[in-house]
Picture (cartoon, rainbow, N blue to C red):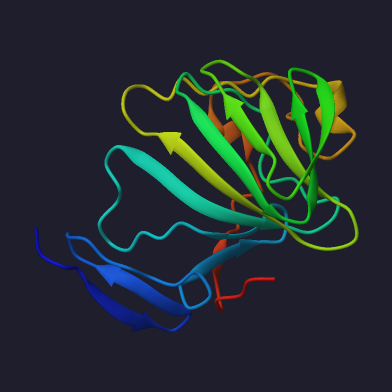
Length: 172
């Protein structure tokens, strides 16, 4: 296996083409949404085929996404800061080094908490049908993280909110 090229984009480093590579999170290209925080997915033009890996940085009160479940397993590790995990209609406070194992079908969302940013390592399977479901949730709605009506369609769940754009690399 050859090494992929690392190129400098306007907003940080990113891999180009297939192959192995090493990239520093502080120097990597990031994306940002005013609704859902900052994120680094580590991918360039070649998408990871079997797993999705990203670091998501949330400000206090900011949800990572809409409350949802997937038909695939996921894993999450809080790297720094604090957040609230809403899982199966329960709120759980998490802090640095807390790990959340998320079996298929588990409804969940993270919301930034505490006094500053929260960084979360997020890993999920890309093998098979993701089986997405965005259920309406009173608990998640208190944090701005619920859909109005239950839907399996991400286009409906995020209608009007898909304004992610690249931003300069930053890490708290």
